[in-house]
Length: 466
Image (tube, rainbow, N blue to C red; front, side, top):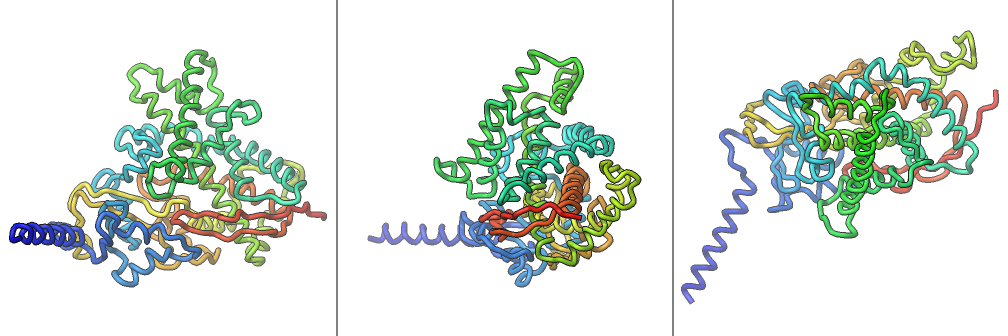
């Protein structure tokens, strides 16, 4: 009897000690206030809880109100320090590779690959970034402008002949086809497999509980990646067997880099890079573009100002039937303000993770070298994310500032930023100058925590008659 009592007592003491240790992580200094939630689960359920706001996510807003703009929590079994402080978030971005480095959970690397660009550091990251900029840099985008406009005009014409078009899926299809052609010369009409369908399955489980069980969204996500990677690997092997004399797309350029003597680029890194580029270039942009059109539907004054800017471009042309020039594109001041504000609210990434490399002291709080920062997206003053479309000066710049971090910041500022803005601006130009639209159904958003249109956004396009 006494032996049983002793064992039960020891068990209770052990569990109590474990729970206390969970709620009070060890630290050489003082950690920010906050709750670690339930053992093992932490506050993961609260983080993934759906919400319909375009304001600060309730998970962040409630904790900022309770603990302040810097707080601790636990997500998917990892202790994190959440920064909703613009100064700290900016500092973290600027210290990439010195005091902090990019880090993502194991579930992320399982999805995007162990050699994905987000998990690489130092020389390899800089090398890959330089490669990508050959496509998405200034010269590449300037050459791409006519093709983007041609694609936008053709798709809008197609949509205007339909009784209803679901904008999220339609814009995703348009952008994916354009991007896949530039990256890998993919033609959906000639391919025996539906590459985009694999990415759709991948996206549906991207931000979900990491249960790799048949039938779950996460399992479908992994299968989508597996199928897409198989297609890319087969394509790479085929091109290595039958190399082309002159590079036609980005994949040709990547294969040339792999074959160079002394290269640091491996096939696995190259394949993970192509996968991430295909995903990032269409899913994030299609979400932002769909939300932009929804915002225009909801705010006639903004639509009027945007339309006036683009109609002025047409009036100032010598040849009314000529295409967009680079100078016209760069003159879209209000359009870029609108895009920046929309991208800030439509960002598919609910948080950006960084790992501290050394002990960091900030405002009397200490972050030890193994703890993680979750620099969550917030608005200009660190609290407001209401969409006013009257962006501050920082929001019109191409680079991140303390008050505008929709595209990240520092050394890892998103290399696809200008490509996203180009596509959005060109589509909006063609849309507002040639068409009007009527909402049919859907358009409501849900964040889980990533942005979704659960019922789609269905509209009817009509050509303008002047």
